[in-house]
Length: 185
Image (tube, rainbow, N blue to C red; front, side, top):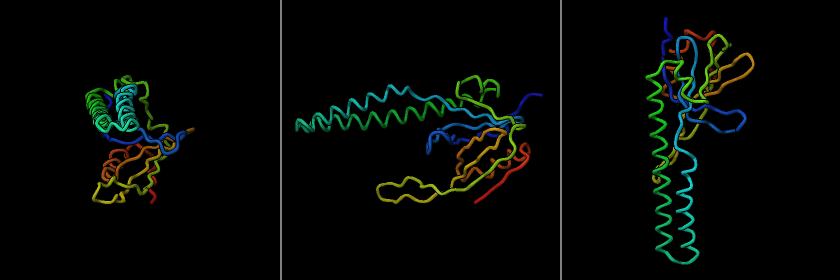
């Protein structure tokens, strides 16, 4: 009998060694294990482009050449926004490609992909915490509840951040495979 994917969730993988750092990833729930993938984005070297543009703008400011200043700042802002958009699209595309693969193929796609067999999970602790949704220029940032999902293993812990609107679906998909789910506020 082949392994079946029962749910896919976009999550942040919390890195305990780096306080406050969450890496964007996707969590695949199968009937045998949890698979986490961190899709590759653009190369970090491309960040040099907006930095150079901002340096040109700053040079224009120092030289009191406002045309150079506005061109440099404009190019820096536009290139930074384009890089963020392209990175997001590439990551989204990588998750879309992974959805068409088998679970074993998903693990082989990237070096940072990993699995958590259900047999090694002693319990899943789910904790609600308050975050803030980004506001706009006219609207303030609003509080938003997210969920920390912590897989307690024999010798380690893996923590993922789930958005509040998918928690019910996550619990529904994982409950048949995990011995204990503890939910706290």
